[in-house]
Length: 380
Ligand code: NZQ
Ligand code: ZN
Image (cartoon, rainbow, N blue to C red; front, top):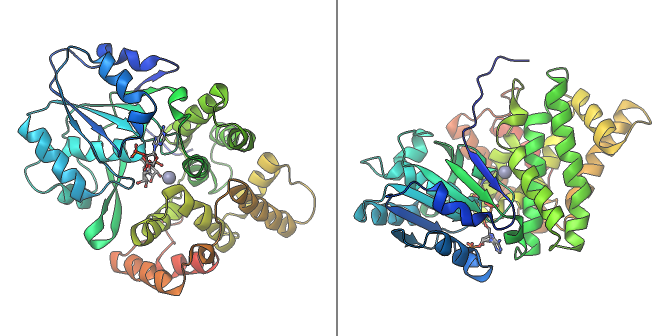
């Protein structure tokens, strides 16, 4: 196990009706800016519950943070926050609203253009931020990451900042999610665990078992949720699993990969594909190309998560990779680039971008432009 220092300061406020806690969670006297997406919160009662909980408080609202939040939109939010001299931010929505608001919280404390912060990669002088999550997927509600896009140039990059002070998670508020967003959220959760688990064996028994438990939970609940999207207990497990998958708890002292994510971000930037949908395509290619480097861990994953224990090592690896692709298909997602009409032109552009930035992703830092090309070709 590698050395580590770990602290996750986000207060998690979980369950039915818990949005009513907001009045207690946000300190009195704060000038609040509440940020939203495109309007789903008006249709599922979240907006009404938030405003009721904050009755008597002062706030301004910023609407329109889009999926894959863009710097173009976030600049407008920063300008509004400056104008009203806000000193507390409340993000209400999915990962995109929360990610975007993390950048707003940094941008409000920075004199230059906020895109400079994205390119720096991190900025920790921020306004305090709380969240109300409506979509289980990203873990943004309990981590310090964000991913910000620039429409003008079709770019998308990770950015790190402070953790939310608190996050309110009411599983009932996920009942209005469309089927595709649920599928993408399950895929994202699954691959978050994989990016921290599927590297090498023998690093930590407890991290392995924890990760395998989260994978097994996703596998167990996915078909049930697809059959009934309004079951409170299923959505509660989904929400908590998504949070636990990317709040740092399963990454303690172990190597991490993230190559699939970095390639997936390029597919979203270039084609607008939903984040979780990109992972369902790329992850299988990553397994196929890096099967030798990851062989012992693929064997462990196959045996412990899918019960694949018979046959030669090569056969077991083949079956484990096939079973993983089947799982993504069972969510109703494409698992091949060709299904999305994506081919050589995009592969060449991603290789060019990775080469230009000197990219070397993955636990072995060997996913360069050339390896990304092989992964994408294996995903065709
Ligand atoms: O905008 P509204 O109208 O609210 O609609 C949203 C949006 O259209 C809708 N939605 C959200 N909650 C709903 C709902 N519709 C009905 N009922 C509800 N309860 O869903 C659509 C997608 O929302 P979005 O926030 O974009 O989805 P998600 O939470 O998957 O976030 C995706 C973004 O997060 C980034 C992704 O790259 C992408 O930009 N990620 C952030 C991470 C992090 N901060 O740690 C890690 C992830 O790997 C990921 O990269
Ligand atoms: Zn993700």
